Length: 367
Image (tube, rainbow, N blue to C red; front, side, top):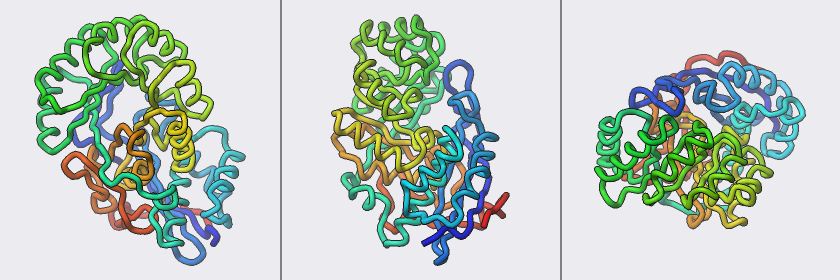
């Protein structure tokens, strides 16, 4: 099998709940997304997606990802899409970093691989270990009243796990978190995420103000060393996210920070291949993890579902299907969250069918 053609598509994803707001004034109501279609010489096709959550969230931005996709694509023509490690090496030889763009091609290759052998991606990753994936949703930074209303509506739809965005004034954040928890059902689990938005001082104030709550903190500060200092100040468990990009970062998260887990985003680490590798290492280290992506629609949700479904349930904290957070659906709104749980599609590859009538013509193509 050889890659005969590559097509790139662009579209916008609209946040389903108005404005998605994080710490330090970062917010967006729409996000740019990129779709990759890889066509093999036997006519099979594979799809991947790379979406961006604003340019001030990670050292990535929409224009950079789109240029990186154009830079990488010609080098993959003629290659076997099932030779995943070779594809990874070729992309690394062309560009350093640019993991978000590499993720789209990696996902598309896995989709093609699965279709070529008639198996879902989860089977190729070791098999389905979890059929009822615990789903969480993020509560954007807003007023206490708006956050409580968000939880009320989404919990009525079956969601029982929520990530509360914090990272501005630590005392106000602590009061808001406490009010949300007190106003919600006892069986709902909450945790907080500063998206690396707090300074060490702010984080120490916020964590101490919430020490009596049954919660964990996700990436309170940008620097791993600052997060390590926080472990000495507060008993609350830490989950690392933005600062974990490589396996070396994973080891630092556990042995330097003392983090109990990590949040693995496919677009941040470079796709299914690297996410699965980091997940397996985390499992072997006795760590826990979330599986998700930076942002995305149906294709991203499908890719995430296969990595999550092939994870050990004892180590998987939760996952998210971003197509439940967005309005646009290019694959029939699949996979779907049902009563707070999700599952990986069972068809070959990603197990979803792209409606090309919804995405228009490719913005560029290579052959």
